[in-house]
Length: 312
Image (tube, rainbow, N blue to C red; front, side):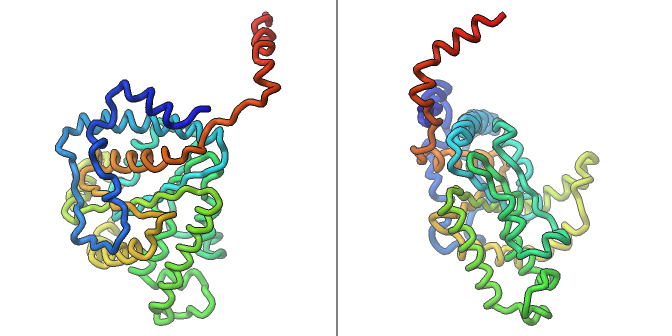
């Protein structure tokens, strides 16, 4: 049987995880009430970018091999949810952390403004149909949490959902949002109980770092396409967004669907933290192994081999 432990053993020859082996990854998990204003946005582990890059390469290689075993096992799916303010590094994190995955084993979904078809269903529908198949990873670049974040900052967006009893913004009261948190918790509990392993990462960016990244988009011609004037309008609502994130995280971080708050000012450190959390959690699933061949096939392996070797 091939298990993750084998890949870890084989990789130990490379002196991987030097930075992360003494880091308590549990400190990033939200297990008690969180105050974002008191949570650090920067981490560098007192090491160089070059070393962080090398360690990430080693970790993601192990994750990629694990995904092959997950695919062969075919009983679990893995859902990775990424949330964060504009410029928090979601796209580049996806590119770097999942680079060594077989393309058939990971799918990335980027949820934009709901389409006309999506608005004809409840707000969780488009997320439900994007959940990972058994044996695969799905990465949500922005997630179902937009429905208690951007819609809470801009409650007028709710009106386009045509929900019974919601005719004006005034109808969207505190009970409405409490119901949404409950619905999201129920949704995640349901999929977790049916074989989906859930990770939720909030890339925690400082306002000053966002300012610098937006300026970079304006200064570098090749980055201009990423900039939108709307980014500046949303930036003015920074404190409102932080409050909404804080409330959503506190109300929905559960043992079966935990939130992790990742310092995001240093992109390399953020990537290695996310990759390390994925690896540490997934290697606990000792039942994820490649399936055994039947006794009949195993007994005839030599015969099959000889058949192929005789072909001209």
